[in-house]
Length: 237
Length: 195
Ligand code: SF4
Ligand code: SF4
Image 1 (spheres, rainbow over the protein chains, first blue to last red):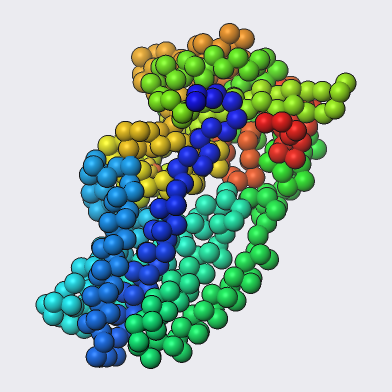
Image 2 (tube, protein in one colour):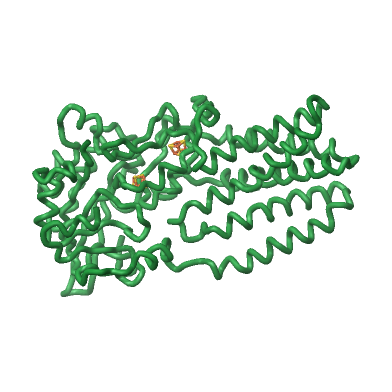
């Protein structure tokens, strides 16, 4: 129904597939990271976990493509034809693509092994880190704070290690405990880092009114120039 | 170079939604999504009641959080301050939707993100944005913030009160609300009884 009143666009973009992507991308990044570490150690299971990382990256990209409203517009090419280092998603696209490329070459045994292994290590770190960053940069969302940027890689790694444990790899158990411990610690800290109002820390930083007509409403969302007089509105501009 | 801005005088707005209808028609905004909408708030207890009709849309922030998060450059800021989306580059990833604190962006059924453009296509023809031209109470003014003769600067100079939405976020909006009916400025969430 057409409704001109209220806040009609809010929530219109968010679906359960967003959550599925966060789980899959965490698993994929974590698995690529494990595969890189196994290659660095020359572990016998390196190839198996590289294949798993490749499958998870491919599955995540498939989910992303399938749920993308732009799936048949092929605009995604712009991710790789432009340079936008301020955007976590730009980093994530490159991280996932290059993890897939280096992981694929390692799995096939093509190319120089050591640089490819270090490449996979670095790119998987990017893939592990970007989803948390993508949430944390939105300072206007009260629940998405900087702690998520730290918590996401640990939970993602925990997911990958848990899968490795389920697949019968005994080396995964001790690091799984550590990753879960770190994730739990950050989860316990999380409520302490939440502000009552989005952006509350930033208003405190700016709230040092020099003129008396500048009123701040105790951390809420309004700054007013009242009465403004000639040109005083410029302080808002 | 101009620095376009808009004012809305809340003491004149009657919430008729003519601006929202004009925007829908001018920009062929699909059903169910909006470039412009009205928030209606009742404040206080009888007999001390106030009603605020507040049209909302993209504020063309001077420091727009929606632009840097865009991974393809589809969201960009022009020299004249307009924040626009290039549908040909948009991958509908939603990063800008999440970054906008004002819920100003929506997903167009064409598979890209869309929002108010201050009617950039009309500005090129020397016309005013459709909402400004349509408003029956003339509560909207539009123009160049750096031109002392522009209607927007005159409206700002004459206003008894000037507010912007959520200034604490540092977005520096270029849509100014004038003469809010409540003595305390724009209605705060905690004061709202009906929405
Ligand atoms: S109101 Fe939202 S969409 Fe518009 S410029 Fe500001 S942050 Fe961007
Ligand atoms: S949805 Fe489009 S405009 Fe918004 S951040 Fe993604 S690519 Fe950029």
